[in-house]
Image 1 (cartoon, one colour):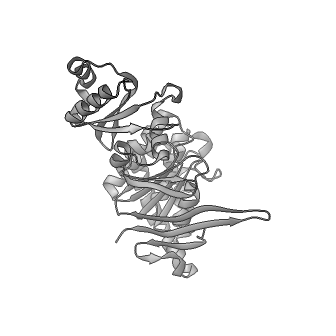
Image 2 (image 1 turned 90 degrees about the vertical axis):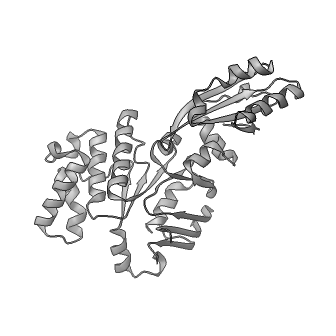
Length: 335
């Protein structure tokens, strides 16, 4: 049984003049220990989805099952108890400005009715985890954005949750700070076994730490799987769009026939194109190339514009496949 199960989840918002179907028939399973990325363009419905997971937004239809419990069937008290196992981290930190670091971390534990001695002990533990022991008496206004997000992470960990939901948790941070926060989340996942769901519009975030990814497009689940699967074999236009957008491809250069090849592991360092030109006596145009670290593995991708002659095109494809490279057609726009 999955830790989080979304079954035919639909969410509709009804206004005075129009009805908006934000999510339609989402089916998703998230396992214990996953770092699960949910990615989509702005307005795709991903933030609505994460709010449905903890029932801050109640689905119009379908079900959310966490740890075997259907949230719709729970009494208000039971739902409050379950929410203590599902913490949330926000883009803009949502810290209490009148409280210092210790006071912010203590907040959730005070609401839960913990004793002060237990709260103080837990705060000390959490300050070590997030690396803020030397800032424990500072107020939010005295902290950098990264430090404030570390306080928010400590606060989310306070009640020993099974799940942490991150809604664009790094979007307000600079690249260096983003990396440090993602590394912290990955360490928390590894050491504490907490399942993390990351809502983001940035493919780089997914590539950095996620084990699995779901792509949301216009309220529909377009594609889901391991990050490795989605990166190396994107099946939908929106997946290709997200991958190519990050790599900086330019539509205007697309010729009549283009292919994408994916290098995995050691093949990413081999001189494939120079060997192709030498051995097959054909010319190709390199439209785009890059190498990335995806889920701890080295992946490279290259988009080639093939020669006009069809026989030469097939020769190129056959040669690349003979080198055990994944080859796929690039059709239509990649933006």
